[in-house]
Each structure stands twice: as structure tokens, then as C-alpha cells.
Amino acid sequence: MSAKRQWKGNTGGNLLGQNALILLFRLLDVRVGYAAMALIVPFYMLFARKGYKAIYRYYRRRWQMSPWRSFINTYRNHYRFGQVILDRFAVYAGRRDCFNVEIEGNEHFSRLTAGEKGFIIAGSHVGNFEICGYLLNPEPKTINALVFAGETRTVSENRARVLTPHNVRLIPVLDDMSHIFAINDALRHGQIVSMPCDRSAGSAKSVECDFLGAKADFPAGPFTLARTFDVEILALFAVKTAALKYKIYVMPLGAENSAAEYAERLQTIVNRYPDQWFNFYEFWKP
Image (cartoon, rainbow, N blue to C red; front, top):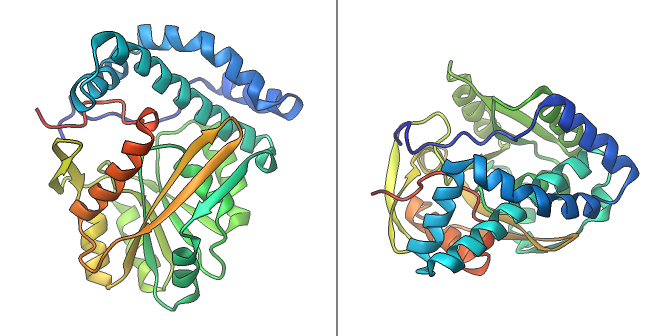
């Protein structure tokens, strides 16, 4: 993926603002933040033009919407993304139990955690994938989660603080490629590896797939790993279905463990929840 098309997925805001959110949600319901977010989103759309244009084109080209409907849905998309970010900070503030969660397909996750082999969790930038780490119980295995290394100290420290008791180990993607050795070691020892499969994370190798009516590049690494270590892949999607409700979909891939099959699973979810597509860059090939 070219530097022009790539988007770095770090959480917005500075340390002071992020710490203030955590303190706020220790005292107030997260829905108070939702109300404020409705007023903040137009300014974000105005000044974060690249992200705005990418989502606007997503609705115009992939969903064939009129300019006006594309604009309205771009606002809804940004607002939903803001809610998801606020939900993360509510969890950091200790309010994990305020969210109701339904899990579809949990039997697939339970079957693989009970087995001797490790496996790969294929995540995405749809919905709130991070919340899976707070709600799924991987015992006796450890989830080794690949994460972006450029987050602020507030996000990194709180994420680790909340996830570690849930048997989740964070592996930052670094330029020295040390994360590759950590991933290989985890699979070799029968553990779980979680990584985004809709965006390259330190790997230049990609596979072109049909996705929502056009061609897009998906990272080849996760699927090569699955074949190398002879392990299964589960596609996991956590989508927001109401103010304080989430639904987690656990979808096993077939024997091929291919990027094309993952793209089909992802397309199924995006068709159901088009407002929760959070890749704020030009995802599809020209």
C-alpha cells in the first residue's frame, strides 16, 4: 500500500484530553459523551479532510448513494466511530460492566481454546474489535494481540492495564520486526495470535481480493502463518448495535484459510453494518 493511501490508526487527542475522559467517565455515564460527540463531529469532518473524503467516497462508490445521502452517512459514520472511541475510554474508567454483549458463534472460540494447537484471530477496523479482548475468555491460552506502536502513553498503559487480567498480551508492531518473532513463538507454543487482517501491519505482502464490488489489497501474512503452522483462523467482528450494546460475531474460515474467504466474511458484516466501516483512507485500488 502506498504512503498516500495508507492511514495510521492511532487514537486522536492529546494526553490531557484522554486522561480527562477517563476521569469524566468514572463519574458520568458514557452517553453524556455521546451527546457532546454529536456537536464535535462536524468540526472533525471539516479539519480531517482525508478521512472525510475517504468515507464519503465509500458511500458514493461502494453504496451508490447520492451526494446528499453520502454526506449524511459520512456524518453518521464519524459519529459512530466517536462513540466507539468513547466506549473504550469508559472501559478504561472501569465501566466495562455497563455494556451488554451478545456473542454469536462462541462455540468455535471455545473449541479452539480447548485444543492443543494455537490459532489466529482475524480482526478488522469495523466496529470495536478491541472490546473482544475484554469480553472473551481465552483460558487456558494467552491471546497475543498485535497493536499499533504509535499510540499515546495514556491509551497504551490503560489498554495493557485492562487487557492483562484477561490473559491478553500486547505485541506492538515495531520497525525492527521483533513482532514477527513473537508471533511465531506464540503459535509454536499453542497460543492465540490476534491481528487486523484488513490492513497491513508491518508487511508489504498483500493479496488482491474482490470486496464490495471493487479490488482491494488484504495482507497476506496472517494466512501464510496459518498454513505454515497448520492452525485455524477465526474472523471476529464486534459491532455496536445500540447505545450500550455490542454483538460479537465469531466466524471460522474454511480449510483454505484464504484472504479471499476472509474478505467475504468481512463483506457480510459491512453489508449489515455499513456505518461501522472505520478505514479512514482510500482502501480500494484506483
